[in-house]
Length: 231
Image (cartoon, rainbow, N blue to C red; front, side):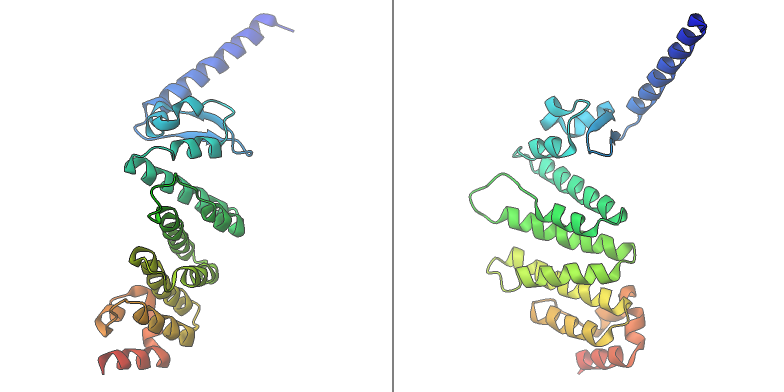
């Protein structure tokens, strides 16, 4: 074996790795690589800055969950927003991998520091389930979006906190859009009526301007519902 040739090859690999890391560090966006077990392999300095609240944990081998949970302990609202964003992105990734139930369970397991019992934890969980349903709709997983939104309606309908009750009304309208795309028009009308009952001020003009309801508007069912709004 040519030892000198092997050493040159190793040196070239190290140089290439150093150049790659240097290039990634120069990028003005966070970059991170996790292995299949969700353990950190590499990240750039921008990523460390983004999650400065848990900087001590951002080391090779650390799990994504341990980093993000430590990060969430801060009282900084911007930190909470980044936490939510990281959770949502993670759920979307799980869904794209065909692990839908894992994605839903992942969002449902959100934990935030307690804050005087003002309902923030529940609010965050509701917000993320609605956001995941939107993401499912975007990738044409309409059946799954409708299923998830039905659960949001059930969990938040009638809540005495208006912030939380609003998730039910949003979910009812978004579910109508998903059902319309599935050509389940009578169910779409029912969900729109529920959205009205829960506080969304629907009008014919609003529905006519929603591209998600284009096919529904052209159906007999949709025409009848529009006529009921114009009466």
